[in-house]
Image (cartoon, rainbow, N blue to C red; front, side):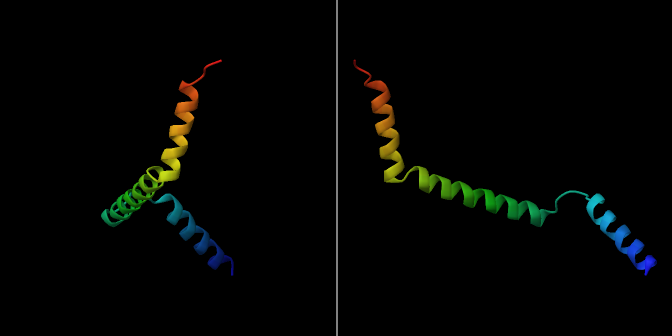
Length: 66
Protein backbone atom coordinates (compact mmCIF):
# COMPACT_ATOMS: atom_id res chain seq x y z
CA UNK A 1 0.00 0.00 0.00
CA UNK A 2 2.83 2.39 0.86
CA UNK A 3 4.55 1.65 -2.45
CA UNK A 4 1.41 2.57 -4.38
CA UNK A 5 1.14 5.84 -2.47
CA UNK A 6 4.78 6.69 -3.21
CA UNK A 7 4.33 5.81 -6.87
CA UNK A 8 1.20 7.95 -7.12
CA UNK A 9 2.90 10.83 -5.32
CA UNK A 10 5.90 10.62 -7.64
CA UNK A 11 3.70 10.58 -10.73
CA UNK A 12 1.67 13.57 -9.55
CA UNK A 13 4.85 15.47 -8.73
CA UNK A 14 6.31 14.74 -12.17
CA UNK A 15 3.07 15.74 -13.86
CA UNK A 16 3.08 19.13 -12.16
CA UNK A 17 6.80 19.87 -12.45
CA UNK A 18 7.75 18.43 -15.83
CA UNK A 19 6.22 21.00 -18.18
CA UNK A 20 8.05 21.55 -21.43
CA UNK A 21 5.78 24.32 -22.71
CA UNK A 22 2.71 24.40 -24.84
CA UNK A 23 2.35 22.30 -27.94
CA UNK A 24 1.13 23.59 -31.27
CA UNK A 25 -2.40 22.36 -30.57
CA UNK A 26 -2.50 24.26 -27.28
CA UNK A 27 -1.32 27.44 -29.02
CA UNK A 28 -4.03 26.98 -31.65
CA UNK A 29 -6.74 26.51 -29.04
CA UNK A 30 -5.49 29.52 -27.08
CA UNK A 31 -5.48 31.66 -30.23
CA UNK A 32 -9.00 30.59 -31.16
CA UNK A 33 -10.23 31.30 -27.62
CA UNK A 34 -8.63 34.77 -27.67
CA UNK A 35 -10.17 35.55 -31.06
CA UNK A 36 -13.60 34.40 -29.88
CA UNK A 37 -13.32 36.52 -26.75
CA UNK A 38 -12.33 39.51 -28.88
CA UNK A 39 -15.31 38.98 -31.17
CA UNK A 40 -17.71 38.78 -28.24
CA UNK A 41 -16.19 41.88 -26.63
CA UNK A 42 -16.39 43.80 -29.93
CA UNK A 43 -20.05 42.82 -30.33
CA UNK A 44 -20.89 43.97 -26.81
CA UNK A 45 -19.00 47.24 -27.03
CA UNK A 46 -20.40 48.21 -30.43
CA UNK A 47 -23.97 47.43 -29.40
CA UNK A 48 -26.47 50.30 -29.45
CA UNK A 49 -26.95 50.42 -25.69
CA UNK A 50 -23.22 50.69 -24.94
CA UNK A 51 -22.60 53.29 -27.65
CA UNK A 52 -25.58 55.30 -26.41
CA UNK A 53 -24.44 55.11 -22.80
CA UNK A 54 -20.90 56.18 -23.68
CA UNK A 55 -22.25 59.05 -25.81
CA UNK A 56 -24.41 60.26 -22.90
CA UNK A 57 -21.47 60.08 -20.50
CA UNK A 58 -19.24 62.07 -22.87
CA UNK A 59 -21.97 64.62 -23.58
CA UNK A 60 -22.61 65.07 -19.86
CA UNK A 61 -18.89 65.52 -19.19
CA UNK A 62 -18.49 68.09 -21.97
CA UNK A 63 -21.68 70.05 -21.13
CA UNK A 64 -20.77 71.10 -17.61
CA UNK A 65 -22.41 74.49 -17.72
CA UNK A 66 -23.25 75.99 -14.37
